[in-house]
Length: 428
Image 1 (tube, rainbow, N blue to C red):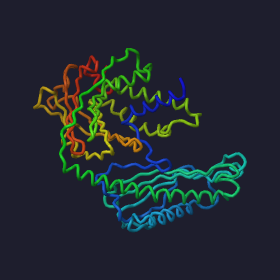
Image 2 (image 1 turned 180 degrees about the vertical axis):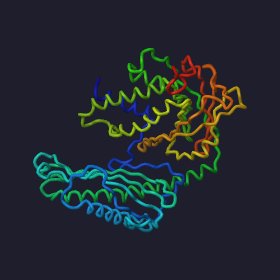
Image 3 (image 1 turned 45 degrees about the vertical axis):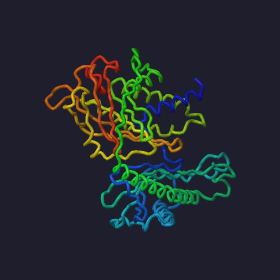
Image 4 (image 1 turned 90 degrees about the vertical axis):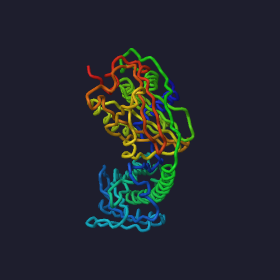
């Protein structure tokens, strides 16, 4: 298989795992929206306190006490963020003091490596490296409004940024601190302004009304007769599409919903294994696709679903595609969401809970995918099974930013023989 085809398949596979991924928003400083209740927490004019960052990662640095680096980073962040004029005030918070500001910036050094000067000059190795991660936390509610992770490294070689004229490892590390602070000077205000726009848009949506978006289209494929460990990329894709219904494309948004039954769940886990194998093949290639570095971010959701194998529940994954990421109001969404049989309008099954899942945002393509998983019981309050046979039809009703959503599942098209297979892991 050619390298080009292999990379294409990886891209497709990552999209199939859309519920499990978070793409980096920026090349050198990754940022993401936290699950916040108020979208205007980063509004311009908020006051900010900066805590000294802790040391959490590996450290190779003997030029000076590490405490000096903690202070140096805080001072540079204060200077750059104050210069951005986005915050009304920016102060460094003494470790024994409580913040009086609207927001607190806190975090940790994930890596400090002064490198090797001789190696940088002679062989291009021994680069200096510096990594940090942190978050903005609201003082009143202790909610995380913004998370980020930044990394910098010098270049080697006689004329590179780590070469003859670069100076000592101490100077390089301090230069990297300035780079990181300057990046966050741009990243945080840009993010805050974006959140303000989303807050306005959310308010407008709350006062608007939309016709329902109906998802009932489905591609049906025969389930493979071979065991999951032998499924190919195509097998997994066909299975996932068989358990997914979707709406036609509309300007106000497109909806897709997947029943995470045993076959579709096994297909997701098989794709995970294929991704790892593909990553190993591409490891030595310099032009490996963007996004390979976030494989590790897939694992938490995989493990979370694995824990839910033990539960007697049905899992329905909802994906909403539009121009911007949806910020789910769990309390409101759960209140309006229910599952019912098409021919039984008087029976409404409420979800036990919603499970947040990371969302994807493709700014270069102008669209974003927001997703949640609804967890439903398998039995009514009186003990009667919700699904008694595989010929039944069910409808999921919910709302996304004031848009009514109707998802129609025809269970007979799944190709399953037992209702037990509608769960992640059926009983023997």
